[in-house]
Length: 60
Image (cartoon, rainbow, N blue to C red; front, side, top):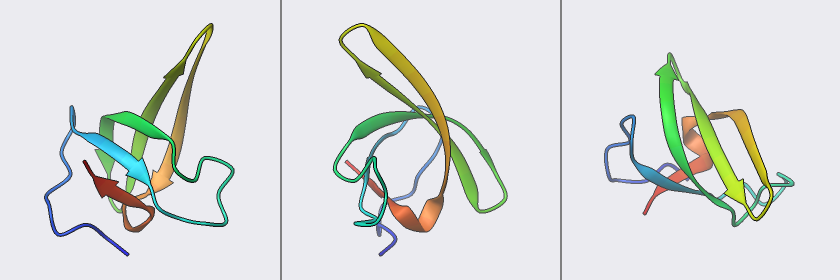
């Protein structure tokens, strides 16, 4: 399910893994290491940095 678009730090991505509690959430890639990306989710009064597989993300 990986996106055809290149995912780099600073990119806006959406979680496409239906099993994830973050499915459908949109965030910003902070850094990439190997096949994983640290994605920053912001919402209202909370911010959360989560590490996810690149294959679970789609570039927006």
